[in-house]
Image: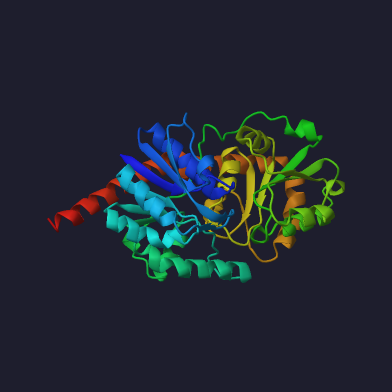
Length: 382
């Protein structure tokens, strides 16, 4: 089967990681993959790659959204006509092109699957989650025209169904992690930092991630000279936050770490992973930390509460995150046996529910189902 994958390769974000991991796994299972993504023509394509790449022109792109050029839809249509894939899978990039895809694929008689990534909160508890709710309202009428829409949790599915997307078109396939690659192991990070207890945040340094609540709690908890908080990632709030929360408080800013093995080594050496977000989808960073056997705390935004339910980790409420962390941070500092226990439970939860292998098997089943439905529909008109 030939998959035409429409997604992102830059700038780095969860959508980029999702596309890389899934397409590589599909290649490993013998699928042919063409990767169509927003890029300048000279930047796209690697002659040594197993994936045929097609660059779609754009005016602007960021971690959150993309603005295509006026000719991007023509480039996409011409490319799909030439490629003749069996199915199109769009890892939605939050661009105007997302709304045109059902019409384009219908004209070309191609089955169309989407993965809908935008973060959400199951309750509209703040301005940020309210804004994300509007994003779902904007997309729902168009998602109803896709053959199938992949979401990461049943809460997310219920939200789309309430907005008018037919339930039989929404498939729940959670993010998956390569549990061979992301696994417990030796690390030198504690020795390098001179720390006995190591806590980590990994993600964007942005408003919706609520990072300052974590930093404020850490600063006010007086964690001592043997504990460190690693901040892995970058974003618009990083420069201003660094000025108030720095090395004198045991906070170490590593910035964006591009090397995947380096990120794995960091996770393996940490005791606790913390995600204080106001809105989320299903955090790959959280799953990666859990797969490495790291005790994890996250808010119940998005699907992260489902990941940690029933004792797999500590679930925080999105209100008063800083107050909750001021209680929990010293507890995890002083009780290594607690982090060890939760680390084992975290790893087991990923093995039970969130492996990449299981994710790809579910995706294969969906591809077959959508293709068969398209063939049945065609036969009615023959």
